[in-house]
Each structure stands twice: as structure tokens, then as C-alpha cells.
Image (cartoon, rainbow, N blue to C red; front, side):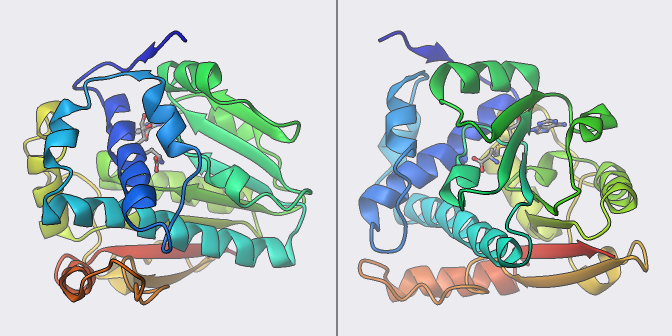
Amino acid sequence: MEKIKIEKNTVQETLIIPLYGRKMCSERFPELYTDIFAERLCERLDYDFSELEKKKKSFFYEFGALEAAMRQLDIIWEIKEYLKEYPKATIVNLGCGLDETGKACDNGLCQIVNIDFPDVISVREQLICKHERERNIACDLNDYSWMDRVDGSKGVIFFAAGVFYYFKKDEVKSLVLELSKRYSGGCLVFDSGGKLALKLMLSTVVKNMGIDDVSGYFYVNNPAKDLHWSKNIKVSSKGYMLGYYDMKSPGIHFLHRLLARMADRLMKMSVHKMLFK
Ligand SMILES: C[S@@+](CC[C@H](N)C(=O)[O-])C[C@H]1O[C@@H](n2cnc3c(N)ncnc32)[C@H](O)[C@@H]1O
């Protein structure tokens, strides 16, 4: 079968990190998390996984895989909660990469929309079959014309997993304000880290992308202060690693949980939910 190429050193390449993390986590901690799509997708990509394979057994790398899985579990939890109230809602995966969270939450009634840059959507279309209530939109998220194509009349939940780290602070704020203006009753879920986490991530995981100075980029040290953008937005935040699940699962070492606590407390890794009034 023909393999699909992913270019190195691009923002798009960053989709590999969580995808590979989800594959690894499914293999290593199946009781905690399984992503039935991730392994098959990795096999179909023309991408040099050797660097990642080499690090696979290291404790810290294993922790990175847990981060990818916990984030998805947290987001799935929030989407399922929202669908209880709005079963016909649209689930919108912002910066979707090759993630299939929308399908994992499908209740048979909702609509699913996946948005990413055109080259990512082109890879996605070659690899992933859409079902009848699912659509892909190729667009830069900062070009709000994509919103004209997303119907929120029966409820809408947007989520951005691992995406806003590559955005400037002002870009996130302006995107959020635009969403809140257009989608009353809608919800947005996304993850963030504090300044320290962002520095660490950009200097290690994505060091080849040419981002040296994190100062203009989006991080959240204090959600109540940093995300207080409008009285029409109700914000709640939880720990990214341990805010939703206690991670007490076979194969998870207490050191994993200790590191998880440090990630949430020191690195200020969080998942935020914004409800648009
Ligand atoms: C770290 S990956 C995460 C992918 C996916 N959410 C996941 O969890 O597997 C970041 C994704 O955001 C996309 N992205 C970043 N900036 C974007 C923008 N301005 N417009 C559209 N997509 C963007 C990238 O192309 C990439 O697919």
C-alpha cells in the first residue's frame, strides 16, 4: 500500500508526536487507553520513526505518551458530557492532525468537523474514511471563514488538543472571542501549559521549528487571570494529567503519577473548558 509523506520541521509534523504517543500508550497501557486508529495510521505514513523508536523505552518518553493519552481522555470526557445536553451537537476538532476523537465520541446523532491546514487535511483524506456525518475543512484556524461552514444551531463543542502551543497569545484570545460571539451555548475545550512547560516543550519536542522566543506564545500560568477575556465566557480548568482520572491503572508506576502531579502543579498543565453564554 502506498505510504503518505509527512514533511519534517513543519508545524504539520507536530501531529506525529501525539499520534505516536497514542499508539505507544495503547500498546503499553491498554487498560488506561486504547486508540484503535493510531497504530494503523503510523504504519501508513512515510515518516522516519527511528528517533522515536529509539527513545520508546525511556521513562520520560513513556510519560510523554501518557500525556498524549490523558489529554485525549480528558477531552473525550468533556465532549460526552456536552453531548448529554446537546446530543445533535457539532463536534469540531480544531487542528485535528490525524486524531479521531470525534469518531470516538460518536453517539449516532452528532455531526463531526475536522479542521487543519490544507496539506494536513490532504494527508487525512488519503488515510482516514469519513462517515456520513463527518466533514473535513482545510483552513488556517486564524482565517475565520471556516466558521461560516460550521453550524452551531443544535449545540457545538470545539476542542483543540495540543494546538494552541503554536499560537500567539493574541491569536488564541481573538479566536475565542470570535467563537463566543458566534456560538452562544457553545463550548470550547483545550489544553495549555504554563510558561515553563512551554519553554521546555518548544526547546525539546519541537526544537527544529525555529521558535526560539516563547514570550509572544500562548501559555497559562493562572487561568482565572489569564483567561478572563469576557463576561460572556464561563471558564473552568482542571489538571491535565490528574484532573479527570487518577491514573491508577495496571502498568502505571507511582513515579508516573508523581511526575503527573508535577506536570499539573509545577508545569501548570491544564485542560480548560469555556462555555459561551
Ligand atoms: C501537535 S498537533 C496535534 C494534532 C491533533 N490535535 C492530535 O491531538 O493528534 C498540532 C496540529 O495543529 C495544526 N495547526 C497548528 N496551527 C494551525 C492553524 N493555524 N490552523 C490550522 N491548523 C493548525 C497542525 O497542523 C497540527 O496538525
